[in-house]
Length: 330
Ligand SMILES: NC(=O)c1ccc[n+]([C@@H]2O[C@H](COP(=O)([O-])OP(=O)(O)OC[C@H]3O[C@@H](n4cnc5c(N)ncnc54)[C@H](O)[C@@H]3O)[C@@H](O)[C@H]2O)c1
Figure (cartoon, rainbow, N blue to C red):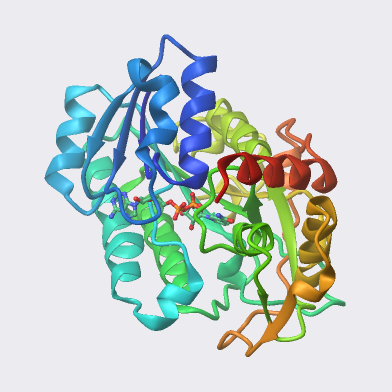
């Protein structure tokens, strides 16, 4: 494969790039990343000789077009995004630029390079929250995004779906639950808890801490993406007969990735404190996030049918994550 990985210097993209380059040394890999505050290019050092790094913006259509042509790219995986909900509540503008305009720029390039496949990474947050009694969301369920971040991701998905139908591009969308693991930006929930706990500082927990998230270890997510890119019919293609009954540009090409590891935020914070041997009295309840979603959960049956399943339990993954941050002395 000749792969363009956008946002490859971020949390999930860096894991994917490292694993893909090591497992597929003969592939051509190009990483395009704007190097925002969320990026850390040094994470890619171990594979520096196995890929090409380009600093730039996915919204720069001419640049993306040049990369696709120069490196004969056949598959784009779009991790690039503004991804922190709190930042989107403060100012949604960068979210619209990267998540919406940036995705459309990629689509414009794919439109004119019809052999190129696009895997677009989205999120469970596009559904908004569900209550405790509700079943996990399926790929065809209605979207009710709550935050400007989630709304921008929903808009990006709609543009991808529209391009599948109107321009017959080869694309698919994956939605995943909350990822965790090494390399995550300090502002996210699990790194925040670890960072404050290591310094014996008060740990801010929104509301009563009982909001639930379904946690997915980042390498399990990367494995799911590898499974999907190795499945030709996962990408919509009008010419390929399929066994998928929903093989229409639409929900048949949206894959859910989740590990069924739902935890209340407060329980996660307490587990981290226990791993670090720190007292629960460090927990400090703070005013709830505006529009804070109660619970997300995804039904990942369609991805599991491709042969993927998560390998890392929440307990094990959390221990590995804490150890990574402890060693890094965040
Ligand atoms: N982390 C999660 O728990 C989670 C959950 C569900 C979905 N997702 C989705 O997965 C994808 C990756 O998330 P992440 O946590 O790794 O994000 P991240 O914030 O850690 O990394 C995003 C990367 O994109 C780059 N980037 C931002 N704007 C860019 C632009 N205009 N052009 C090129 N590069 C740009 C940043 O520099 C950074 O390296 C995102 O699309 C996000 O919405 C993440």
